[in-house]
Image (cartoon, rainbow, N blue to C red):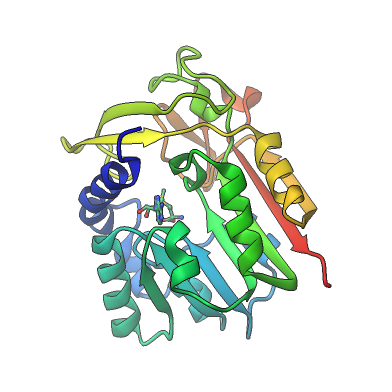
Length: 265
Ligand SMILES: C[S@@+](CC[C@H](N)C(=O)[O-])C[C@H]1O[C@@H](n2cnc3c(N)ncnc32)[C@H](O)[C@@H]1O
């Protein structure tokens, strides 16, 4: 297989400056104190004050810093050096005590030697990995006994469609890598940037079974017929802060979110 890590890292390094400048990530509001987390994951996270949190694939740090502002001790990880440089700059200028590590998450066992009350990951994270068992093993290794993994993700049904949401183009199930040259990004749809990406689809039970197999017991699992982000083609806001693909309405799931607990020894 081509070196998917280098290809995807290059894409994220190029996308990050567009995201920092985008209306989607709304930096002026964030800098003024707006919390970037959504109700869906906030409800699962609960009160994070005083909790240690490992935030995987933190992009340029808005959610990690938001959790820090809520009183959590956060370590954010991302493999994009452009994103992590921005995250560190933001945390320093906002004086939020949040740590950031620039690394492929699968290299963490050589870099990070503690366990956390909560491991958190959200929205657009697992598609970058071919092997969900390896991912689940990594997560389980970083959750303290009695701690929780909190995860919010786009529904695998979303990734079955072509880019106009007209036809089923890809399998629901994990299979061959999906190689694409995409123009623009979810946060900068009109931009001319073209990036090559390599991704994989992961069905709901593939994810849940992998977590269960590594000792993470499901406490909650919900599917949603909307997204809190206007990030996919042809979306409309049907209620404040809730978006759907206009042509499919509430007929398809757009998200799922779960909490899983590592049993105490
Ligand atoms: C869609 S973004 C996550 C969005 C984030 N929740 C936010 O609100 O901005 C996916 C992130 O995964 C990161 N990523 C992809 N593969 C990775 C890997 N193997 N290790 C670490 N980070 C990775 C990318 O750099 C990117 O920042």
